[in-house]
Every structure is written in structure tokens, then in C-alpha cells.
Length: 316
Length: 253
Image (cartoon, rainbow over all chains, first blue to last red; front, side, top):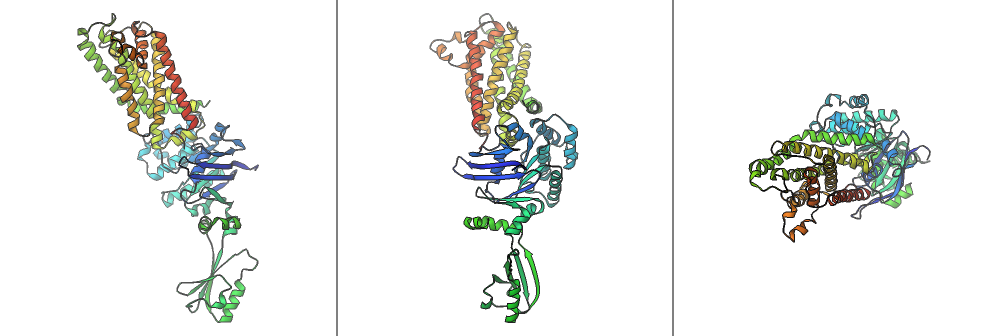
């Protein structure tokens, strides 16, 4: 793909223990997008990121950065990638300023105090620049790790669970930062357990499960394709059980028979809502209110991860 | 070549050394100086001269190397082991820096520290015993070469070690005994056979002999043999480290 800044081709990883963490993953990341990689614990998210960044060795397959192989052009590839790992691993006895400056040098960039100062200010770390890393709070350490990852001005930024264990305010700050980075042209790939985070920020979403990438799509497209709508009908009188005459619709009773729920495909030519309402009228079932709601990305994620594989393939 | 990366690691390691100066410089110098006090100033006059050199002066090169061996291994092994232990190794592994450049930076810093330690130790020795250096250029060559070999060895230990205990095992249980039995306190020529021949299989004997020759022009083994052992240690350790990086041994999964 011409607009792919990062391409993963048939990437496979089998650990020495025999665990197959990745099963031939193919993925293209578009330049300038925010891509959210979702998956349960142990699905292979971190393994995928670590292979791309050079921390874990792939069993087979390749990664292309701007079309260049990440091994034969390792300097080119690595200069372009920044990584914020999941674990808060820092040089405990170094100051924030020194550790960020170290990262910039390590990645081959000449000293630029003005740039480091700018990053620290953007991350609200300037006041802490002289503090040793061990004295920072978890949230501040997370910011410092982002500062380290940004210190060499990468085009591609990996954020592995960036908001794990941080408070709501900091999470919002980070979302703002991610948006600003994207606005500046940085491509961002993030893994998260917070589906809300992906729903809020991502342009595209990938779902990984048991080492396989089971869905990759635009967030809106995925939600439209996979998402379902539910019509809730608040009944005037509760029903003890579903009348047999309503068996043609996928209905269920909730709230002690007070609410009749109808799950339907909003993109189908015939949703079945009109005929259902007519049938309710025919049966003399009165209702006092109606509401609809759409399944969230979280619902889709749970469904994708837990549905049998054959069904997923059929859905795709 | 990622010169900024090499400089960053070098400065980082030297800064760490600066923070632990008592442990990494002052303590080993004091410990070695105590040997000079005991064997040089206190007991030295009662000991026979070794090939025309007073006993106190004779032991200076060997004791200097003992301190250099230990600190070279500790400094270089800790430099690479600590990021493994804390997890910050991810940054090194994901950086655009080759294994050669990384080793150059870590080992270069460790060599600098050990050479400074050796020079301070030798300077301290002059306070207690008479000292002369017959071949100053060779003294520097042996010092830098031996230090480089042991720093490379220490780096390999740092990659190999899975815990802090393993970092200590080889310097304490292998290098210290080999140094004590390697002619640091005596001339190998004074040993009876077959111990003399057996001792020659100890590479430390060759290193101490060569280093001591640069001071007093006295040898236990030919100088070429000392140079050959020094070069062999460097080459062997470089080969092991190259293999470690190529295979990702205990660095990458």
C-alpha cells in the first residue's frame, strides 16, 4: 500500500516454550492515523509491538517501515519509531531531564535542549525536570516515558497500554496529547484495555485474539458492520412470558417483563420494526415508550473475541 | 555510525560511576593500599628481594591488576545487567545502535573507569613503596589491553547473569583465586615442579608477568606470551559477545 508507513507481513512468533504468540499476522498502518490494537490479555499485542521495535525476535515474517525491511535498514526503521512500553521501567536514579536527553542521544539525535524543554513542558514535566525518576508518581513516570519516546522526534509512536493505571484526568490529558501528536503528523499505534479509549480516539481498529488478527477496519465501519441496534419497548402492562405469536422476531423480556427488547440489524433492508409494532397492536399489547441504542465498540470486541472462529470468518 | 548513541551510553555510565565513586574507586584503592602498607611498609623489609626488586614494589603490578580485574568485571557486567534487571534494556534494543556500538560504549566506559582506578592505585602505591616503570608505553598497552579484555569478559557475564548472585560468582570464585595463585604475590619461578608447569596454564600468570615486566623488566613468562594471552582474551570475549547479540542470548526473547 502506497500510504502505509508500516507494514507487517506474515509475522509469526513461537516462543521457546512452544507457545505460538503470533500466527502469521498481516497488517498495514496508514501514515498519520491513530490505530488501536485491541485484544484480551495474552492475545499477542505486546509481542507484535516488541517484534516491530526490535525487542523480540520474530520466528518468521518481516516488517517494512516506509517500504524498507526493518532488519536490513534497522537504523532507518528505528529512528522513525518511538515506544512507550506497558511496564513503568525507568532509570531510577536519573533525573527526568537527563533520562530524556539520554534517550535522544541513544536514538542518534544531537543534543537539543530547546526541544527536550518543549516536550517536558507539553507533558507538564518541566517542574519535575530535576527530580530523580524514583521520586515520581506513577502518572508522572508514564509521562516521562512518553517524553523519552518522543525525544528523538519519531514519525511512528507505539503506546502500549498508555493509560493503564492512570487517573481519569491524566487519561484525558494523554488523549489530548495523542490527538496533538497526530495533528503534527505522527502515526500512533496504541494498545489498550479501555475500549472507550479506542472508541474515543482511533481512526481504525484491529482486534487480535490468540495471536491472530481477527478484524481490522475503520472504527466507524466496524461499528456499522458489526454493531447491532436494540429497540426497547416499555410495555404498559408487564408480560409473564413472550407470546408465541411473537416468535418470528428475536425478542427477549427484561425488567420483570416490563421491557420488550428487539435486537435488529439497522443496515438491513427490512428491520422488522414496522411489522413487530403492527403485531403488538393486533395482540393488544400496549406500550408507553420506545428507545433504541447501538452496541458499543466494547460489545463488538467481546463478540469478536468470544464468537467461534468460523462465525467470525463468515462475518468478515 | 551512531556516535550520539555511543556518547549517550558512555556519559550515562560515567555519570553512574560518578554517583558511586566511594564504592567503585575509593574503596578498591584503599583496600589495595592496605596491601602496600602491610606487605610494603610493614613486612616488606623482612621479605627477600624478588629478582632485585623489593617485595613491596614487586607486588604492586599484581595487586593493581587484581583491583583492575575485579572492577572491570563489576563495572562492565553491572552496566548491562542493571538495564536487564530493571527492564530499561528495551530502549537499547529498540534504538538505532548496532551491537558493536553498544559494546564500544559500555566497555569503553568500563575501561575508562578501570584505567583511572589503576592509575590512582599506582599513584597511591608510590606513597608506600619505591616504584619505577621501565617500559611506560608497554605499561599503558598492557593496562589498556588487559582492562579491555576483562571489561569484555564482564560485559559477557552481565548478559549471561540471571541474578545479582551470578554477577558475583565468577569474579569472586574464579578470578580472585586465579590472581592469588597467578603470581600476584610471588614469582612463578620460585615454585617447585610440577606446580610451576601447572601454574602456566593460568592465563592470569601471563598477564601479571607482562604487566610487571613493564615496571621492572623481570618476567615469569616471555613477553610475547603475555601479549598473546591478552589478545586471546580480548578476541575470545568479543566472539562470545558477538554470538550473544547475534542470537539474542538472554537479551531478546
